[in-house]
Image (cartoon, rainbow, N blue to C red; front, side):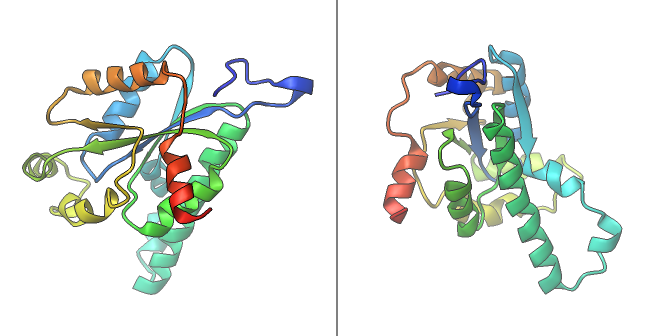
Length: 198
């Protein structure tokens, strides 16, 4: 559990807590993350995978062949995982939003975030609503969310799940905030590590 002061015994820094929002594109992760920063009682940082992609020089990325581009994207996501872990290990509380559309991303997060209290939240939204949202966005090709649906939640284990079509962003944030008041028991990440034999 997070030490709010960030400092443990003998001056050691206690790791922060990570609220890990996982869902397909346009499911509402970033909106929930922004609301959590307002609703939570202590300072959190929002770190999203899209933020890291936006740091990359697009002009050079566009010149790469598909194989090289795939490797750049993989390194970007691996770096994102390590940046979140680094911030948390420095005592910061993080709201992380991600799209676990490839199995290696979850496996990497399980390894990199070991020793950190991770609250794993599944962010859901039905296909029809995802299509409607994509039609109103200029930054996503149509069908992106539909292509991700089968893979993103394939592991099927969460601490908490929310549905942004059935509940408002404020209600989703409140549900997550309420969950944080519970005594931490066997977290989803612990169960997933045990399942993977880690």
